Length: 263
Image (tube, rainbow, N blue to C red):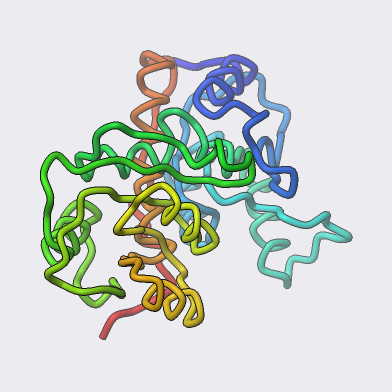
């Protein structure tokens, strides 16, 4: 049971077309080793030491990540450097790496679409008509709900504890339209407001962005960068299984890579 690397890359580009990636992004092959066929694929949000070890234990030929292994050009590979260490260990163990980042965020069934469906949003529309650089979408709830109820839904759908969320807004305000951008999307707050959203869901909201939202009457749920993007693993794995039809084994990473602890 194996799939050619070329067929696999074709499938990945079908899921997340390369042309959707932002100019500053580095989606695509990160480490491309000589194997012609791929038998085992591990899907993870990003590369960490534990994820590399997980891939080695599984005997994976390739890791598919959301966050690219490399954002900046490498001037040298240093085993004592974190990225250099990952690179050496991956190559030593014959593991290639492919990343689908902003192209997956913008894809028809990418992170934003997946979160919108988890929350049951209807009448989905992209932020992209306001500019190709805008990532995210907005949609309507089937019936108005208070902010405090939607906070509980986000906790439930993303399997997060209350400590992992920060909220801006009035708990009892009724919400009918929600905008969202998984990862870090505070720069989309104004676009969300212009599309009639009463609530915006994202991660990595800074103090001044939160204050601006509060002053302009925009409710915000900051569910964290990791919290809003960990759905990548399940989503990408499901889509790969649909396309590959058993030609390769696909594993969802079991490593919790969230760098934050909630005491």
